[in-house]
Image 1: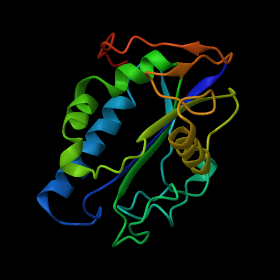
Image 2 (image 1 turned 90 degrees about the horizontal axis):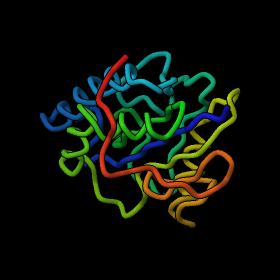
Image 3 (image 1 turned 90 degrees about the vertical axis):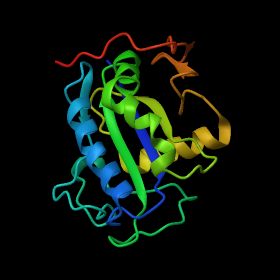
Length: 185
């Protein structure tokens, strides 16, 4: 049975190592959000480093998720001192659980604050696509899908919750009027 891959990308207003209260708040909120989402029904896994150093995304060992990559339009730093981005790559059993996790609870609260932390880039900030049951998507896959979405709009190759595709290639719609639950397992 196919699984849903979700790649998110945002350009932060300041580097991850910036000691400013707003940057620390984003980082602390992100850690709490990851803990909550990992307990959500339908969540399978996400890309994590073996070291976990703040800002060391490009040098980190990501295991089967591949070498860390960013969209071509990202123009900020790539060193620990200058990296100003937030990216996630995760796997889900289906769209409904992923949608519910994104639009409820702590993550919903964080989304409401996104303009405090992130620049408005004019590019999509997430992409969804289906992968075979035995496939672990890579960071390069996520970047490719996000750039495809920006260039071509929603297609089976890369889509959004609002304009989505079923695993069999047919256009589908998820009810985006609101999440079905905020439960954790």
